[in-house]
Amino acid sequence: MADQGTDEITVDQLAARVGMTVRNVRAYASRGLLDPPRLEGRTGYYGEAHVRQLQLVRTLLDRGYTLAAVEKALVNKSAATSDYALDLIDVLDSPMAREPESELVSRDALAALAGVSRNDALVDRLVEAGLAEVVDDDTLRVLRPSIVRSGAAAVSLGLSVDTVIGLLPRLSEQLRTTAEDLVDQVRHEVWQPFVARGMPDEEWESTVSTIANLLPVAGQTVLAVFRDELAHVIDDALGEELAALAEGSGAQRRQAEGA
Image (cartoon, rainbow, N blue to C red):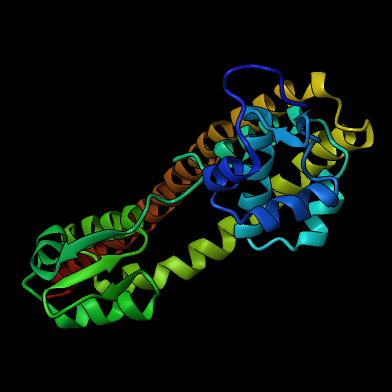
């Protein structure tokens, strides 16, 4: 419930603050998604806690959750739950967790990144792979900037466009499996026990902190394992190439001796 004070606002101001209609605000209140206001006569006054409650409802609805699902998750929860839940969403929306927003890039700039001349075939492959959209004859909207930049760097080092783009779905499939395994374990060992305990307010901060810290740890672990496996594969490939060179040299020597 809001504290009495100078920062209190009316239902009309609350609706405007969170970008909702007054009708929707009252509907959510009737469903138990908004704490009762402080009443002064017939006028209700709302505080920052109410704003956060409605921001959470809107955020979840915007992410595709149904109102029934939101109601089941939040009804009769304390206002503090909204603060912690929004903190958790902020963690999940952090740069570590999400690909940066799309960027506008010229065709010439993209070609320069890849170390090739302006190439419509390169653009076509990026569009087909879901990595870019054509804005106009000279501009692309790059949907996954970090991946496209890394891929362009690989092309500039000598790999073909087909090879680089062809690797993406294989990498995505394998890493998605790893990500799903990790998330399942976090849900089983961290989140579900927390929910089973009734999501007590005093445990929200530590739960959010645990999930926030797991994100960089998971990324660092995947990178470390990949580097280790890459080193082993390079050693094996190098051994095969050296063996092939030695065999070729031996064959040439035997041929020369026979002559």
